[in-house]
Image (cartoon, rainbow, N blue to C red; front, top):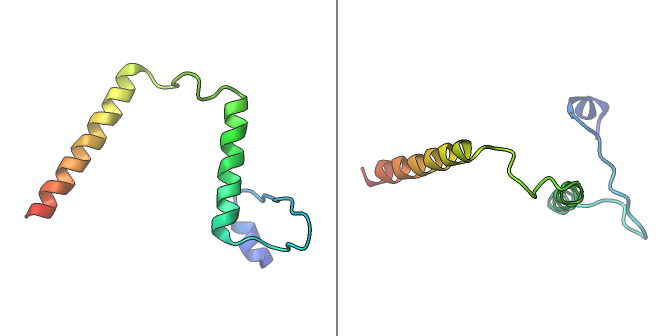
Length: 77
C-alpha cells in the first residue's frame, strides 16, 4: 500500500502469519480482526450486561421496527 493510503487509515493492524503465507484477502483479514475484537471484549466482560437502559433499548427497537414498516410500505407503492 502506498504511504498516502496508509496515512488515511485510523489505525494500522498487523495480523501475525506463520509459514509461507504473505498476505490475506480482505474478507479473511476482516473476519480475523472482528473475531479478535469479539474475543477481547468477551474477556473483559463487555457483553455480560447492557450498556443502554431498558428505555433506550426499547426506543431503538421501536425505531428499527418503524424503519422496517416504512420500507415495506414504500415497496408496496
